[in-house]
Image 1 (cartoon, one colour):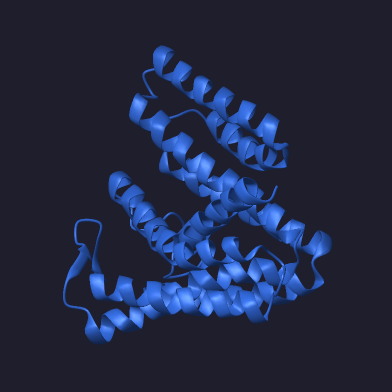
Image 2 (cartoon, rainbow, N blue to C red):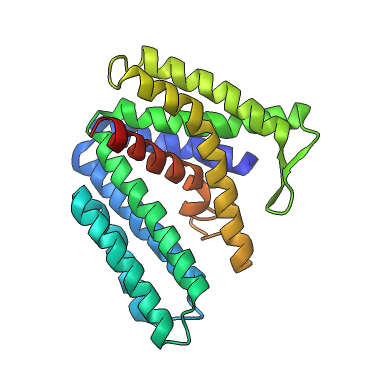
Length: 256
């Protein structure tokens, strides 16, 4: 968790100028991170499937978030059917593979769609989701360090504690709400801000545990090696992916 916090702060430092200038620079950054994340997914299956599947994953991640909501749903269903069709005709791809790949693809594509949508509300709106995510990580780490006694999910992540999770949730909820009120006032409806500020810290921690579960399944320590001693892109932004996916869902439900 300490490494994740450090790398997260570095990423924030790198992305702040990108967010400030926005435009094509921001779109290029999202494009690059999407490709790297896709390659990290393909790396999980590299010993099982042909190279053509790598191309399928990358194209899906790049194209699906660009579709309108109606066609996005059509795309999701089409991909699901295609993946399970593969399980019928090819021994190198089973039901578990199809389920995991579909889940990962949907997490990333929904997250990218979320980033694209939130960006229309300004760079400070994107920072709202990022602040909620990384304050949760930091607060949970330090609360757990000083007060942690009871394991949260020992099978998946033995170092996380219930006390840390609660501390991260409470502190981040408060910080997120204050950020929304004072930094981006009137940007979103108050009911959305309350729901997002309270739930994003919980979703953030769920994302962390979910991606740890994926790594346990594939018996890998990290998704990639882009950041020396810190893993890959998905290792660093797992919680952020879940929060953008969740916040986009709120926007789609309450505003869009």
